[in-house]
Amino acid sequence: MALSPNPNIFANNPIDRAGHLRGNPEWLAEKRKDPSSLFVPLWNLNPLVLPEEVPSQGKDVGWVPAAAVEPLAGPGAIEVFLGINRRGKALFAIDISAARNPEAEGPLKGFGAFEEIRGLAMKGEITASELAILAQAKAMIDWHLRHGFCSACGAKTELAEAGYKRTCPSCHAEHFPRTDPVVIMMATHGDKAFLGRQKIFPKGMYSALAGFMEPGESIEEAVARELDEEAKIAVKSVRYHSTQPWPFPSSLMIGCIAEAESEDFEIDGVELSGGKWFTRDELAAALRGEGQGFFVPPPFAIAHHLVKAFVEGW
Image (tube, rainbow, N blue to C red; front, side, top):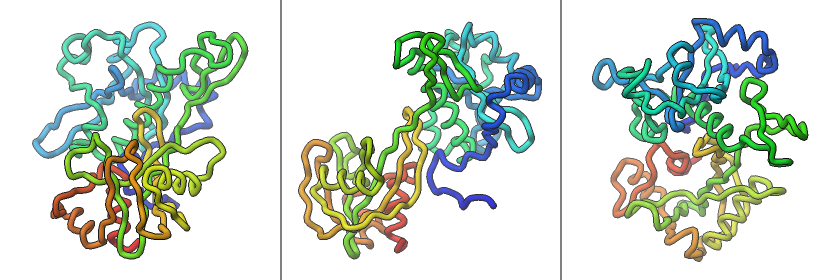
């Protein structure tokens, strides 16, 4: 049975990751040479995106055959097996950052543009399922670029298991892609919810509070700690809402709604520059774009869906 759709951008990845095949070098080599296999090239961590064929139709991922990217990849280019699509084709991501300017020269000239996926998501220019695949590709390539050397002995590591492991030939340590958990939460009290502001926010924007989880900490404990540290809000219960993969570079946003003991708060002045309790009606108006002097993040952000859930009585 399929999972219920996740409301957050970068979730709902439709491909079969086929983890059981990552350790099969013969199968991978066969698929690597298969002309039906498809590659999405990333240049400076931005994927190739095809322009709209018809206005308002939307853009597409620039899937290309191996022959189109091999001349641009350079020796030792990072390549990751993403999975198998519903048509049975093997999908790969490949780093072509060694290329000088693939948009203007070489086999991909005039084919499309290398675009930052955050901008694509904010503008709604590409489908949610394709954004999820691109998030996987970006996060994986980024991890390899950051972890080329062994954290145990400092030796240069080698890519293994289709890109889902790096091994150290010197001390034999194994290194796996990491995901950093982040709690993002909205405190509620009766018919009100608390949102905060950071100095870097656009004027008038309020959002949910967030922070990285710490070692040896549960999700509930992290939510309570962050609300206490940033706004001196004490909570008595925490409910999980949803998660959002966040490939900037490799976080998982864990969305929660916490029930506060009271509406007392005190802004720390470090993480937050302001905060306020908003009524359900005020937040409903903000979701409609009718907030009086304030607004909340767009659907691109998990904070938007926390606000929406509260407004809808979740």
